Amino acid sequence: MKNTALTNKHISLGAKMVPFAGYNMPVQYEGINVEHATVRNAVGVFDVSHMGEFILKGENALDLIQRVTSNDASKLHDGKVQYSCLPNKDGGIVDDLLVYRIDEKSYMLVVNASNIEKDWNWIQQFNTANVEMHNISDKTSLLAIQGPKAADALQSLTAIDLASMEYYTFKKGTFAGVDNVVVSATGYTGAGGFEIYFENEHADQMWDAIFKAGAEYGIKPIGLAARDTLRLEMGFCLYGNDIDDTTSPIEAGLGWITKFTKPFTNAEALQAQKEAGVSRKLIGFEMIDRGIPRHDYPIVDAEGNVIGKVTSGTQSPSLQKAIGMGYVTKELAKEGTEIFIDIRNNKVKAKIVKFPFYK
Image 1 (tube, rainbow, N blue to C red):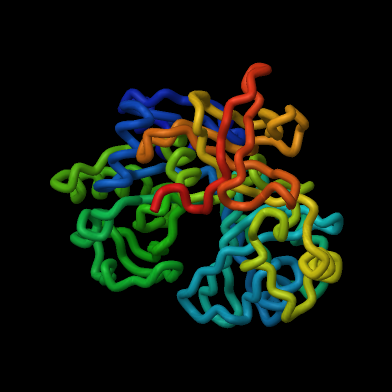
Image 2: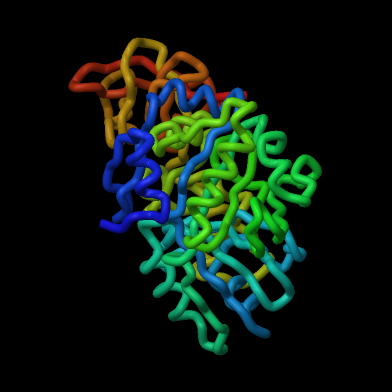
């Protein structure tokens, strides 16, 4: 089990620790509902240092990224970030990721913790033009400071004008007295905020400075459980649940990051799928009757026929109702359609709604 540079901090703060993607991670501190509300209404800090970071450098770095990712990275400029995915050869997804353009010949890829080795090996097999690749995951810490008060809470720590940063952009600069920090206006909560990348040796200094600066804004540490409820309220996919090696980006509603303006892995098959239409689609649903949908619960029709399965589900803290995501047959994927979740052999009524759940 790996630790992040901040594991001892979490333990000293009384966090409940759990194994996640090979790391010892804080799942909650005070409780999911309190932590969730903190991020939605004020500001909270997630240690997401388990995520993976790769640096790609050289004349052919962009070409390699273009061939392995579904989105069009040629549209990036220095300081811009793009959400994308790595399609596999069978119509599924190796991983979803962020692509950061540092400059014309340097990029950072941010990948999911459970897929670091898998993604590295996948990209490496396409690296036929000597692109310099560095896996900096083990020496990089990452904090996500999320919530509507994030810019105010952090501004005293840096000369970078945080409030003026556009969504999905980043800047490099001094932060909390540490040089060469990447400050990124990204996050997976839908609450706004920043993600901050720095070397492990500065982790304690960074954590302490952020909590001191944010004290007057009610800043709190947040665990992975609230991260999951926050992303689910936005209808954001979680790799391993809502997308995986067997789900295509078209089925998953990720056609917007699948650009057929350039060749990439399995592009022809995905384009044919987009033109012909898919047989199943990822949908969001709200429970009408009482019951909480869980991963892998069957989705059935009124007669009890299985029409799909739940990929993510929870009791939404913001909406005070149970919500979920799952794949169903295309014919039944329309907004407003009544479906049923099979919860311990009981048909529990739900209806299909539009993403995001939290508006």
